[in-house]
Length: 147
Image 1 (tube, rainbow, N blue to C red):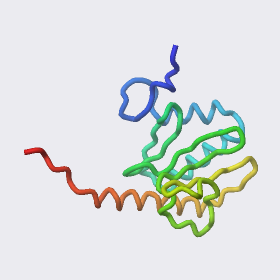
Image 2 (cartoon, one colour):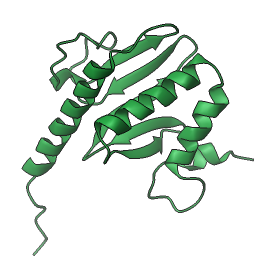
Image 3 (cartoon, rainbow, N blue to C red):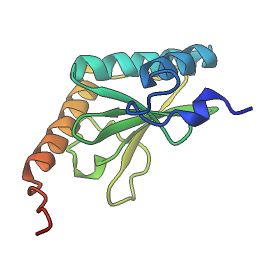
Image 4 (cartoon, rainbow, N blue to C red):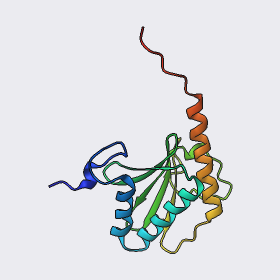
């Protein structure tokens, strides 16, 4: 029997729990510092962008979107990883990015147990990611209809 987690991939799916409920479940399921950190990051994302849309993709990855993916919130044994979809295009004056630094597109922040988050800098990075997504969305030309 498949879990609902495997079936749910988007807010657009009508069956199963909402992505927000799935993320609630992940935070609770972890039950340790990683769940606490994921919940804290989620709160900061919502503070930085009250219009953020939560998604649940790739069989169990929390995703935050606004005119495209802002970031994901993956949890591993030793880290909670925030991967910014277009992180390479973002200014990071506080030096928050500490992972996936060699790629051409993504950048990530690995948060380990006991790490402190620079909330002001993280919210600024989230807002910059949203602004980049919004600017790219506005530049897309309208799709031409076939004749």
